[in-house]
Length: 255
Ligand SMILES: Nc1ncnc2c1ncn2[C@@H]1O[C@H](COP(=O)(O)OP(=O)(O)OP(=O)(O)O)[C@@H](O)[C@H]1O
Ligand SMILES: [Mg+2]
Image (cartoon, rainbow, N blue to C red; front, side, top):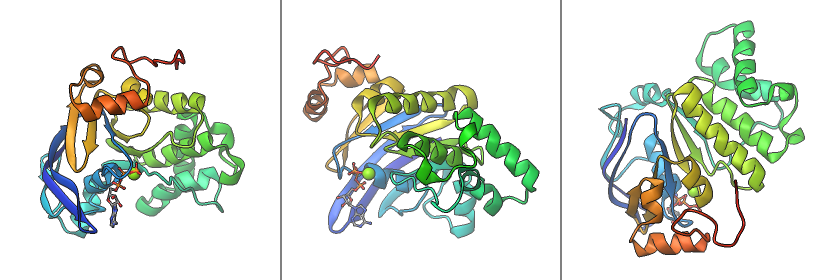
């Protein structure tokens, strides 16, 4: 469904993505990990061509998209919902209006239908009571969920998440993880999740790909990932106290 073929991207004289090839299959929750600056966000941006590659192909549902013009690209983008690192909600609008925004911009639906669709998504995310609140009156976790409601309001096939749990406490983070898993179970959505949080990666991912110095150093199931022989992967796992059983080594637990 998403395929990167020999993608290279140079930014500021640095080869951020160095001839990388990988695929995300339909229905997967595909997790991308790596140190800060590894190119995770740059990879996500290529999926919707917010960045164009210097070489290679980005293929979505069999269509090469990095050579498409503006309007054809716009059509491809409707397949995606995006929750970016700074999932900024517009502060002067209620949650209802924030989530309704894409419907008002991209459809000709009437207000009654729009409200109905927004409420449906807010209910799915446990935010029905927050419809008339403003972002400043929500907790961090609620803001992320409102951002997620907005990302899925157009019923996308694929949702891209950039650090969906950053800045959240562990309990709220696990709740967001559950929501990402539910997106697949209940709506059949394919997810690509960028995260620093390996515990979350291991619990939600169907595959985990690690980027390091422009290359893919691992692309494997969670179980294979924690047993990876790659030294970069091993030290990444150790830095988060993960043993080969995928558990915390320190006695802490997230169950
Ligand atoms: N628009 C840009 N212009 C120049 N350099 C950029 C640009 N965007 C990203 N970079 C560089 O590309 C590299 C990868 O950036 P990217 O944002 O993908 O990292 P990341 O893996 O998402 O890191 P983090 O975990 O900190 O979000 C970094 O060295 C960054 O400075
Ligand atoms: Mg990033």
